[in-house]
Every structure is written in structure tokens, then in C-alpha cells.
Image: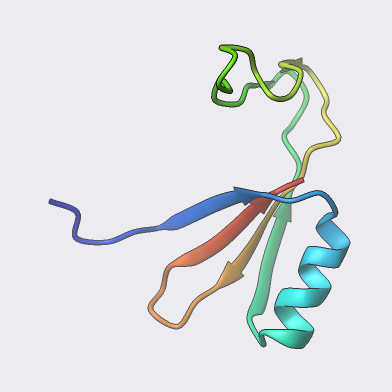
Length: 80
């Protein structure tokens, strides 16, 4: 059984709008924005058609993973 959750990540379309909403409207603390380093392979779960919803990336990527701190020590995260 799970005892603790570090973070849950959701897909977003615009990282800046997501940061603005969750900091200004919801009041969460923005913690970090991470971009994968070069030579990192990223992939996403397959969709209903059995294909990745986004291109699999080798090397540098424009994707960003943003984190907001929740009160219990866990995080809400988004991928753009």
C-alpha cells in the first residue's frame, strides 16, 4: 500500500499560463521548472490508437516539467 505520494504530473498546453493560474488564482507556491538535459530520451504513454501522443524525443527538448508545492509535502506537477 502507498504511504506517501511525491508528485502527480499532468499535461498542460502552456507552462506560463499554468504557472500564472496556480500561483495567482489557486495560491500554490511555484517550486521549480525543469527542462530535460541533452541526451535524455522522453516518451509518453500510448494513446487509444497505440501511438505516443507526442513525438519521442532524443536529445534536447523544449518540454518543461513544472512543480507546485502542496501543504503536505507532496507536489502537483505539469508537463508542457
